[in-house]
Amino acid sequence: MILSTRNLAYGLCGLSLFFAAPAFAKKPVRIAPKVMVITMFGDEAKPWLKGLKFTRKIRLPGLSPEYPTVDCTAEGLCLMTTGMGFANAASAVSAMALSRKFNLTHSYFLIAGIAGVDPKHSTLGSAHWAKYAVDAGLNHRIDLREAPEGWPTDFFGLGAAKPGEKPKWSAGTEVFALNARLADYALATTRNVKLLDSDEAKAYRKHYVEKAATGAPKVTLCDTASADTYWHGAKLGEAIGAWSKVLTDGKADYCTAQMEDNATLTALKRAAEAGKLDFNRIALLRTASNFDRQSKDQTAMESLAATSGGFPLATENAYRVGKAYADSIIANWKAWEKAPQVAAK
Image 1 (cartoon, rainbow, N blue to C red):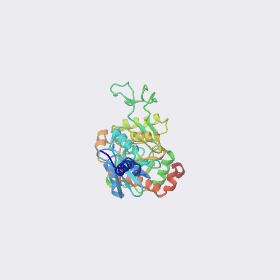
Image 2 (image 1 turned 180 degrees about the horizontal axis):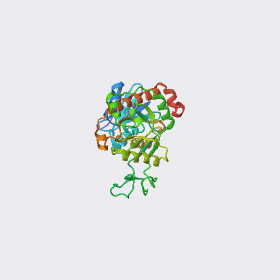
Image 3 (image 1 turned 180 degrees about the vertical axis):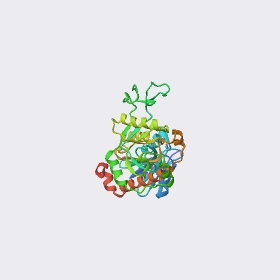
Image 4 (image 1 turned 90 degrees about the horizontal axis):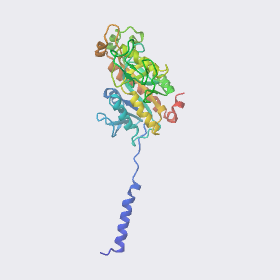
């Protein structure tokens, strides 16, 4: 079969257009959030979803099947929910931080969730910005019934000989020191936010004798401990407070207990090391939904099972305080976009 010159030219032209087509395809526009809010389960996300107008949903592979999208407002705030516990937090945050759908190089990250609180430090509904996150799960553990006599607790550092000693080896994720100046800024910006309180919570606080526990909720600075185990009780609380001191050479001031933050921060740290984001732009907020230990007139189990009224306060106040912080960044984006150290002066 003999092709005419004209037909051959048309054929070659069509082939060239076919193979050249990808060169003319538009690159997808990556979303550049000003603030990425990270919540851990649905009740933490609800006040944000109710209070703000989200105009865009971004479905990402690797997020929790229960929370498969990142939702964003037109003003530049995005919200994701990881699912509870270390595994969910690390995998979902990694999926978000490494996604090609986002440009996070100038984004600020706000971890905003609820926690148990030490009654010596604060009370139900209070809000706490952390400078340190300590892993309370990466350690040795021997049941106290089998431990050497006189041990104050059943867990101790990896490679250590007894409680109170620094670990001899580590996984590298036991302690995260966050941007202290950013935490100070967050406190200064939000300390006067009006916090939700209730008669139920006020009545429950009367179980406690600690002055901080019986007062009204407020915004403060203190540090947080992460563990997959939802632990409870005075003995464990004292041990974890001491453990936080050991791991940070006395710098951490433990007050809240939660189940995700070291996993979330590990994922963000890896993304920062890959050049995807700035680890200095992370703020960590935990609000008190319950006391982490019993009062003088309770057993630990009675305390764990009690209805204190703190849960609805904590979910709402995480939103109120977190939103005030996020709003301050978004409203002054020209300054904040450059660097947190400059903006936080």
